[in-house]
Length: 106
Length: 121
Image 1 (spheres, rainbow over the protein chains, first blue to last red):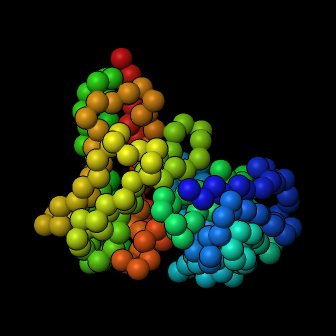
Image 2 (cartoon, chains in turn brown, blue):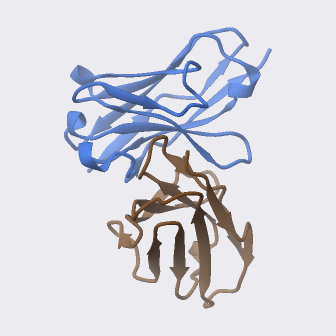
């Protein structure tokens, strides 16, 4: 099983700042890594799939990079609605797995 | 519009059985995987399992294998998650999510609204 470790657990930033979130895999996830955003009381939403592809309707300020075991989600300039929890997830090897999440707070 | 609509909240007692549902619309139900994800109160996302309705290929997380059963009825475009004997530790929100085409298994691009399951004596 691929274990995904996200860091930091919490990121305290202000609107307009750049956010950099990390996801490290215990073995290669190839490029099959996705990022999701979850706001309180809502279902998760797909942001990035296959490491660097933005999902439909996702603003350009969200970008993903990486391959193998190290991945990054970058939010270039935080908007007020971006303060939420972010999860990474791999689909390279069964079983699928999620990371523990990073909370981006003000 | 692609949509997944889940059944409503449930309150059950330990030892009872339960089957919750997830109805897909706006796309070819048999051509995409449907996965289930658990979120315990205040915790993160856990992948439980996934089914490809086109051929009923089903995969489970080792953590949930034998604890739940995932199925699908193509005729009504609906996937199911069921328990034969609930425990208090099954209290959680359960999400279904469309999981990509047969070659993209696990790309969750559309999510249901979640079903809250509460198990309490």
